[in-house]
Length: 252
Ligand SMILES: Nc1ncnc2c1ncn2[C@@H]1O[C@H](COP(=O)(O)OP(=O)(O)OP(=O)(O)O)[C@@H](O)[C@H]1O
Ligand SMILES: [Mg+2]
Image 1 (cartoon, protein in one colour):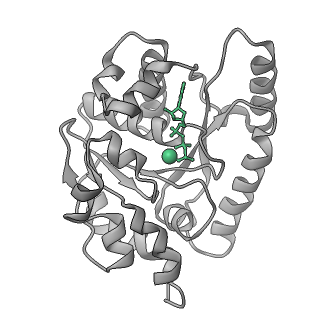
Image 2: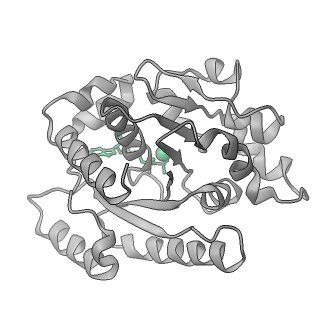
């Protein structure tokens, strides 16, 4: 099962969700591959790889920009990772005028996917060539949505793009399969109202589990301290609940 974690809005919790799901799924004995498609490489650093580490072997940068192989690496958490590097930002230029430029990732993942129960692709905050590659390669799309006033504007645009990926024959399987509400402050009535609006629009696509605001999750990213996900903070507990829902929904 290849899950693309997508929302072109920045800072909504894509990377945090991707890392937490990958970690928890690996904890539950699943074989997990994470593909970092974001030149910011936040997922890569959270899994403990420096830019030099990423440069030293296979990466999405090497694959897209210098045409190297796509080879996962094992991380300390048991999750396999294809890291990213800031140089991945040159993909648009390096693939300009190339054929099948949206299908490079799908092609590269094809021989790898059978070795994993789940592949999670972390996407950059834009709807460009890198995100199109993720949409073309995936079996489903998971959209983290930060609960804030204009959240649905971005999601509508994402739904249009997902529709186009199918309509133009890039990937028949591409659909929004799940949405998770992130950074919710339970004490704020406005958050509850916005969450209701999003549920009214996306119905059962929205997972029951809500991810609360939790500074522990920021610390996890700051220090690459993935074991914080085993703890009792509200965020860690919520991501464990979300992982269970994800396993049920997609039979993982
Ligand atoms: N539930 C949460 N509570 C508090 N902080 C959070 C939560 N989820 C994410 N954050 C923090 O918010 C910031 C953005 O989160 P994250 O990096 O996961 O979003 P993103 O969508 O991947 O961002 P980008 O679009 O830049 O890739 C980070 O500093 C992260 O640590
Ligand atoms: Mg990110």
